[in-house]
Length: 227
Image (tube, rainbow, N blue to C red; front, side, top):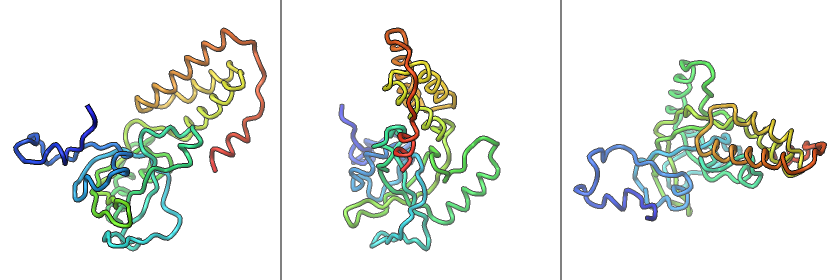
């Protein structure tokens, strides 16, 4: 059955679940591809923060402004950031009101050690947001709440995965296995862990079928992936 937004399923109050007021969970790529389906709705999604928007932006008729909001470039939760193409292509933008930013900064100071700051690069966060407008051919997403998830994909995992997969392509299976094992050490989201475990199994299988090789430098690969 195709994935259908709740705004379509709940065309009448009688058809909606009892918890109708709770935000619907929506994949971020679906939200950015067809934001008009959720216009005026509050939804929940998961993103990976890339960082604050560097260039100046205008809110057009959205009601959002650089004076009252911080614009964040984000990746969707399904983007695998060790893939250079996915790393270089953020899937969207969210706008955080200054008062939400300040409130989250206060909560961050009260969290236990080891939980990342919400707006740090690579932070995986659960976001409650509202599609406040659809103008200039895009949806404008205003954040109501943003908080880190328990499972993260830290930059170390990304770098170890890049190196491990590069070594695997070279046939240097022993080092590839070591790098992929390191990539798997943090508490990762299930879908990310599944992909890396599959690559690790592939590396271990290859280790039994190819002669030992020495590694070439992967510095160029790192530099290209981080640009």
